Length: 247
Image (cartoon, helix red, strand yellow):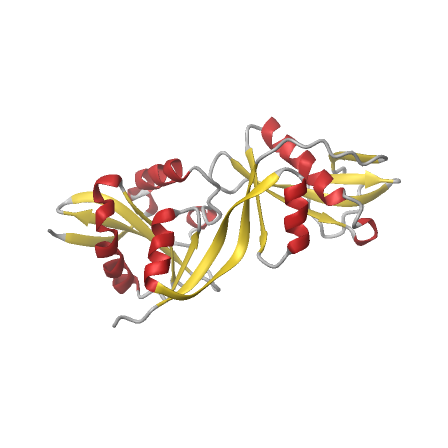
């Protein structure tokens, strides 16, 4: 059996990425790395046939290529995962693996080949429709008259004539997902406004034909509680580990 791993342009592995995203069926938070040119891609060839691909990027600096963050084999070749991965690692000389826990193939490589594994973020998917009541609050798109400072959010909550919270939808992830972000201004915190604006942003996502998703840092318990209250549920974690030295 001949295995070759060749660095190729994104277009040469795009069909494999399509299958990867269809099979995983979740928001892939590193999807934009390809669109922005932050990653290098490699084609896996087994006995002359395309078998899958891998991708690396920089974990701290975008110009580095020290982290494996995508690793995919089509079903006929998936039994070769533990054969191809060490060769892929040797070629790229990557020192880290980053993956989502809901990506079973790369997660299995993480636990087999890495150490010092830790979770950096919690991932959320929509689970329930909520109807959170907060009286005297208006949700709307921002206007040119709003005092936003350096906040470029597209939506706001207004209470007592003042902007109490802001947020928006990031659309640079894989279709059909939209990543929700929000911020509640200090005088208005602990009033339930965070969950309220998330609830309304979820509705906006669906109106534009997108599926809302979200994430927060692993230690941000307030944001996690806000997202859960707004009808999200935990669907995975963003994991990272250092690749072990070869024995």
